Amino acid sequence: MSIRAAFLLLLAAAVPARAGGLNRTTLVPVYAKCPGSGNCPAVRASSYTFEQMYLYSPRAPYSGPGKLALMLQVKGLKDASGSPVTGRLTVEIPASRITILSQGIGTLGENSPLAAQPPYVVDVKNGAARAKFLTPSTTPGNGLIVNTFGAPVVYDPEGKELASTGTQSKP
Image (cartoon, rainbow, N blue to C red; front, side):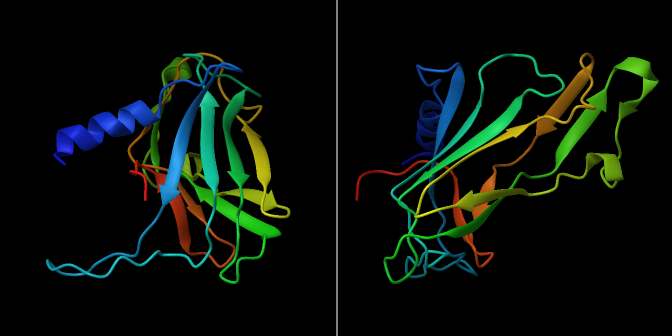
């Protein structure tokens, strides 16, 4: 598959969901890195598995204080023995470039404590979770631009990569 075709598939995966005014992105399993230029056996980065995992984001073009930032839905999370998981997942969002046009602030420095993005913690019970995260009450109502240059990654309870945005074909 060409890079262009893979990119178009990725865009198709992020089409808006019909209900609730949200965009729904399917998350796919993460496989272990392969060092060097050769091929490696396909091994998942985590021993945990899941049936479905979706990341939702607002469809609205503008954000503000106390608005939905993202939501994660998990179904069928199981440990290596096949048992439903009760535990915690962590969602990390890659570094963003934050610009505040009002009050003459400008673009925050890459190492600014104001630009730090703490991980989101998601409690899972019996293999299922639905967690919503809102923007902080201090989010500027006007003049804020956040550029994200990578994909969110979901980590299993042991801290290993479990899922990320992407695409996959049927097994």
